[in-house]
Amino acid sequence: AGRLEGKTCFVTAAAQGIGRATALRFAEEGARVVATDINEAKVAEIAGARIETRGLDVLDTGAVAAMATEVGAVDVLFNCAGYVHHGALHDTPLESWDFSFELNCRSLFVVTKAFLPAMLDNGGGSIINMASVVSSEMGVVNRCAYGATKGAVIGFTKSVAADYIGQGIRCNAICPATVQTPSLDERINAFDDPEQARRDFIARQKMGRLATAEEIADLALYLAADESRYITGQPMIIDGGMHL
Ligand code: NAD
Image (cartoon, rainbow, N blue to C red; front, top):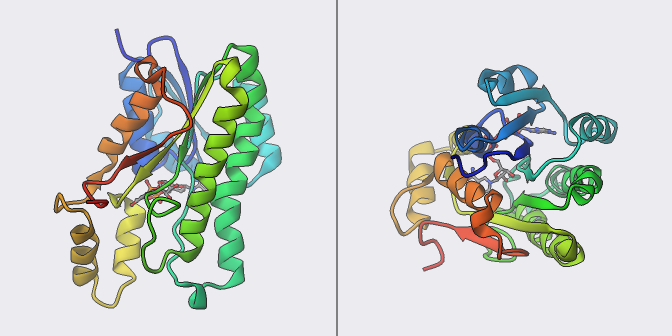
């Protein structure tokens, strides 16, 4: 039997990158998956026997509440939506700081709060939040707003883990280094010398390569599955040796 047989999983930002790879991996392991993204047409590409897709903007509190009511109790909630602002403090506009916190943090509050009551009624579940090594784990250049938001994701994760541990909820965060995804390509192509930028991104991981979205999906699968039943409140680092 699959590692997620009998479980219902809800995923945000599932149209591409890590969210998409994870929705597909969850389904392969027997879960029923509700895969959502602001890009409804693109997420619909992965609809299938075990995957239902829906348009969902995690910034739209009304839409999130309606979705939580429609979907009901889930066993696994994967909060994957997030975005990278490039800049040091001196070249980060306040609007970019605010938007980073809206998309990377406020969405976590809104989505998790909407889905939590039914999860509690159902005896618990696994909540997985997308953080980054660029957070309270590590400082890197030009990630002022981003690193601040992902540090907050880890703090939020630990708080949810502490508050609901007696009610069957586990809550963990995933902290990747650089992952090959469509938005990474966009960030690299925005440099004056994209080839050098790619070499620089690769050089940070001492394994000498980027992670694949599927490698991050395997960690999400582990945190979703019962194999990780004794793990909660953890920022799980998956970084190809960036810390070494
Ligand atoms: P991506 O950035 O390529 O794709 C992001 C997806 O989010 C898109 O499908 C987009 O339509 C969707 N999205 C954007 N705004 C949305 C909204 N308001 N509501 C719902 N969906 C929305 O994907 P990725 O690079 O895999 O990043 C996913 C997560 O992983 C993010 O939280 C990111 O910070 C984190 N992360 C990525 C990397 C990396 O190197 N790629 C590293 C560490 C952490």
